[in-house]
Length: 226
Image 1 (cartoon, rainbow, N blue to C red):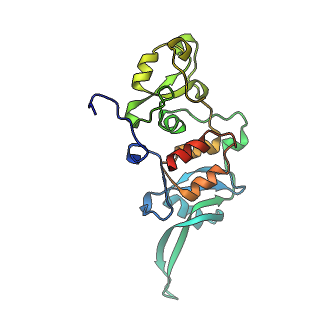
Image 2 (image 1 turned 90 degrees about the vertical axis):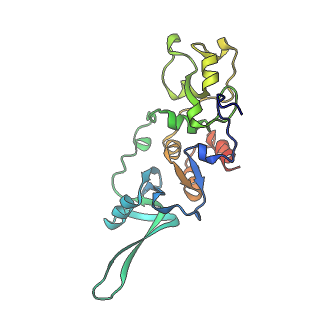
Image 3 (image 1 turned 60 degrees about the horizontal axis):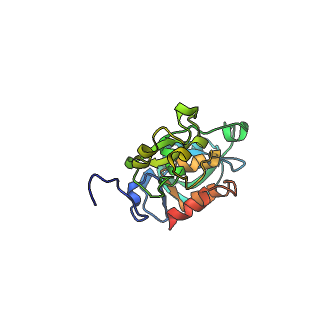
């Protein structure tokens, strides 16, 4: 391959992408985030093991599901001589005010950034349908700013740099380029998934249950798994 050409990636080259779906049996260390949900089961955010331990300690964990992610060892009881052990699950539901904008605001739109945009589109250029490493991708505005386009989820797609340069300040129709998929605005649950860097299989299944049935992410996640 010519070093000046962009790097087209295969499904096996998972290291090129910053979203990974991993087995619950994998050795993930303390870097694996915990998925926090509200008491109704709606996904809220990713938290690290320290925040999860704090929620357990303060009695804010209503219930847990998924696999045991961590066994955190505390101090030794002077009376019994036993050491306390806190088991942290991969998914925890917490009580109290959730502040979940996906539940409280029907007009909520997740913030747009390249990281989640590339993940939404599966790291695939929406013009040439090739998969690329993150460094070779860019954000393309379907209707350019010069023609009244906005920087919104429904007006942006992932594009390789070559296709983006070829399209320039034109619409796909004007450039005689066809989109391979229709852009969409993620729901809050979809956005939580797209924000995750390492998503365990059970966390993925939990989030999938909260995706709309029509979500394009269903097919894209299967593509990543295959």
